[in-house]
Length: 347
Image (cartoon, rainbow, N blue to C red):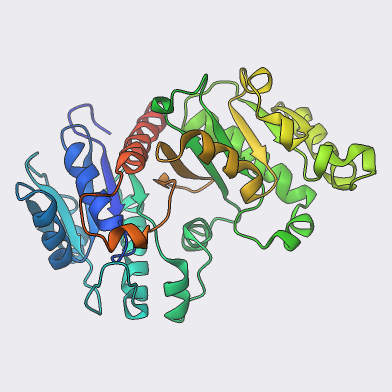
């Protein structure tokens, strides 16, 4: 991006009955002098929420048709750019409506198009209510899988990272070998080819999007005690260790497998750039304990940059009204997207 302009982030506001619209508006407004956030959602609803949050918030609306015709126009710093994606049903805070499932999903398509067409440098997403989208008749397991399908990406990797303001001894990043799977399906999903590709994606994106010249990746075992030499499971012996040997032969600095219950110690993490966990809760329970509300969800391996918050829709909080939601994770997510876009520009 040219030095003279702010990074442009396409920002989907997520499930309208949750905290997504509020945290998106508040974070975008707070960061308006360092990042240009282009909000994507129902214009009338966002205007109503904005008036409740801060009557000073003003918008510059632009249609998708206008973008396709002329590209992204300039916007003064006292305005937030807004692409209107109308909902199908009235929003009741804390009560998602399946009739809004498809319009909410459409905001992701718009954000993808914005980045692919060069109108935005990256995309950031507020949380969705997966069950409501499925209730709307669309099979949906999460942002990560949806973005992979829509961009034609064979394999992506979900990673969460703790912000520096979490005051941890060093940056903490946790990537996942599997994502949103029932626990009983995890062992069968850990296959040699996919695991090697996951390690390659993590290594490549740490270099390109994070500016880490020579990343060091620590890998957790699947079983207790990393299998205890086969007595507690053979996945480490049959799959994980051979894959790590292959990765090292390719020049990737990867170590393990380590028992997951002792891996997250300072003596291991001090020189690590990322931990690769075998399944969702194995890695993310630790990271969220250490930095909840100050973390960012990043999808690696995509042909675009995508970040998100480290929490869900918080329907119980939304029903209590505006002004209660914590926007720190959204601030981190937007800033992280802008930083990664800058790293790519420089690489």
